[in-house]
Length: 154
Image 1 (cartoon, one colour):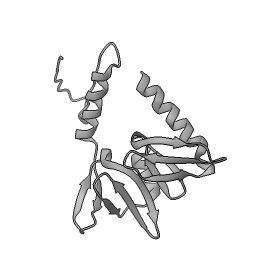
Image 2: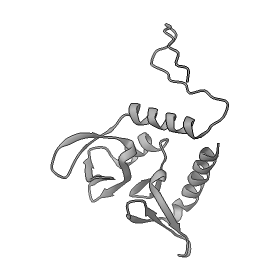
Image 3: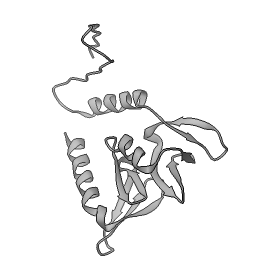
C-alpha cells in the first residue's frame, strides 16, 4: 500500500482517494473503514437520557413515533431532534432507503425480504426487527437494492 500526502492551496477540505486496478474486498474494506472513521454521527439521546453521537453504521431503522423521531440502533433506541425528512437527506446516500411515510431502513442491515404478501414486502433486519414496505415505496426499495447489489459486485 502506498500512502501519499499532498498539501496544496487548491484543496478547501481534506480529500481521501482510494485507487486500485480492481474493486476487490480489500478496497471495499478500506473504503468502509474510512466512512466509519470520518462520517458524521447523528446527535441523539439514548433511553437513559444521555446525549451522544451515534455512528451511522450502528443505525438499523429511523422512524416516526407520534411527534418523535426515533432511531433503532444496534444497542439501543434513541430519540433525535431532527425531522424524518431531514435525516433522509443526511442518510439517503449512505445506504438508507425510505420504506414508508414514517420509516427509513439501512440497506446493509437487511437480512431477508418476504414477497409472499401480494403487493407488499416484509423486511426482516439482521437483529430480528421486522417491518413492511408500503406499496408506494416498493419500486424505490427494489431500485435501491439493485443499485446496492451492483456496487457490491464491482
